[in-house]
Length: 329
Image 1 (cartoon, rainbow, N blue to C red):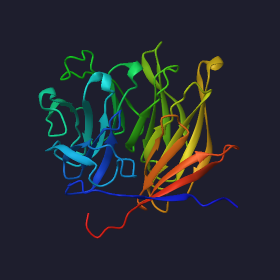
Image 2 (image 1 turned 30 degrees about the horizontal axis):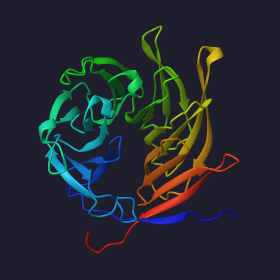
Image 3 (image 1 turned 60 degrees about the vertical axis):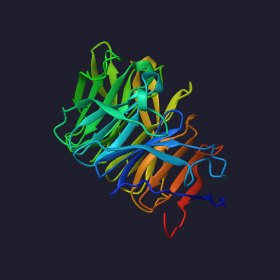
Image 4 (image 1 turned 90 degrees about the horizontal axis):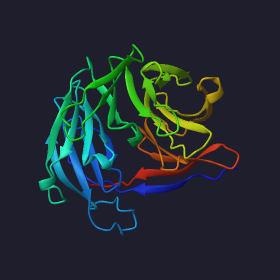
């Protein structure tokens, strides 16, 4: 009989937003985080103290809001930090059909207060922009977006000293019913690849063909019964295969194994290797750890769950984290 997963407790703090928080994004070092909400605001938080309270520094009082501002004219769905080699900046996307790139003003940075400047506003989408993702550093300073108009759009800051100029480099329609999420292949040993989740329950893998200078659909991952909310591509670390996790409105998480057959013109072959059903409601987000060995998921049931494969390759729930019950935040 399988052992029950270990249960831990979260210690929430009041983020001060006036509506639903849609995204919480840590920077590369885990010392800062950005939150965004349906109240049209973004808040940047800096970690203070040494985090010696026994909760890993994530407890109440360990994060201080250093900046808060109205960033869009509608609900903000995602915030995404750029690689720190490009500076202190992140991108946001919104129901108002725009993507904005924000840079911290160096003269006023620090936990006592910071100032963020809108360096660029991207206006190409015809409907709500649902997700935004910076490319892995080896591909350059590029940004991918997906929208409810069904298109994936790719931008590039050709001159990193001029962040106001982000020309659109490519765009392609992935699904006419609208898109919800996307993620890049982080491996530097493969051609550029993007996975896109849609409203029609499908997940599509796209690959850039350098010889033809265009994006081509490599394969479709089918298995979910409803809209796909989140996709996550595991760090490869030199392995022969890739792992992709998907989260859906159908209450499930699915893990897929991708292999690239380089002898057959880099043909991509995918298979479903696990379906995880512990969440009792919609699953909104999945994310891998740095080594691609542990998967985290969160859903409308209020729980944060961690998953890991055992010695036989079966994915099992490792830890369940639930919010602490508090009368007043």
